[in-house]
Image 1 (cartoon, rainbow, N blue to C red):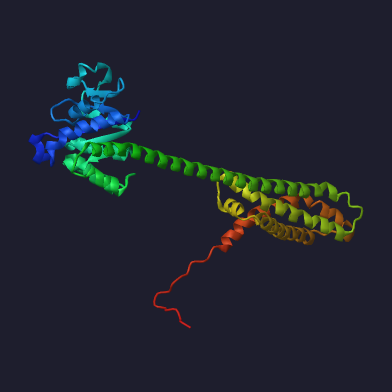
Image 2 (cartoon, rainbow, N blue to C red):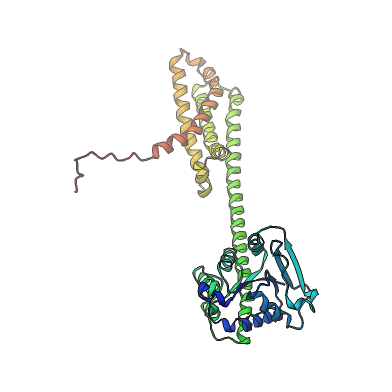
Length: 381
């Protein structure tokens, strides 16, 4: 059963101080509210049996219902003031459960208990009731404030309007209605269950939204991982092809420099494509999101990186081969043999060129900031 905290008071000697209203009807209203709480199956949590506290009359009305469950009235109190006593205890001992709190200050006992209740019913009351109501609002729990009796109940009612609570304008208007009846008490207590159901619905919606977000995130991660895996696989295959050219170059059956040059120059291009493809994987591992984000949202980015790596690796390879040819005095007959010796170096050069190409070009893509010269106005065509 839901556990409802009972908070408030209507001391006639403090009517002006607390801004209380309709005090003559407070006793009857409290009894009827208590009877309805019992009838609708709520447990109650009370704190005091001091004169004119909301609990005294409400407990009397609660026990007037014939089917009150044992232990359905919990009494939380601080040992600083001793155990409260209610006149109805004598014939209803099994209905009360006394919960002493070991904090010496009653404020600790009172306010801390509000985190464990399922709702609150407030009528009248002073500063302590006001704070208690705000605590319950902060925890987004069902709350009915009987605004027609003034005091903190009226202030909490106004706070409910400002905080966009899970109640309709009609429900708020009902809390402020001044004409009292037993049927009206039934409707007010019914608002507790209505709010409880609405909060449960909102929580379910929140959980479903969160679950949907988590599922979408998981799917996105799977997609990202798939993209990264493809980059890694393609890069590994290309690198193996480039590396295997080294032993395969020695199997060329002729010493024709042209054929050998074609094979040699293909090495840095393939290695460059491998380096450019692995760039996304390296950035992902290092936590850099530049290329990783591009690869995630562009399904053709792998082809672009491969093309970029081929061009970068090819340029680096051609430059390296030309430098070696013009720097060494090799006869045309020995040219093919000399070119074959460059293959392992071209693998390294091509891979490094492809790896660095994306960074170089991304820096080039950055626009140069416009420099304004003081006193010179731009010409308008």
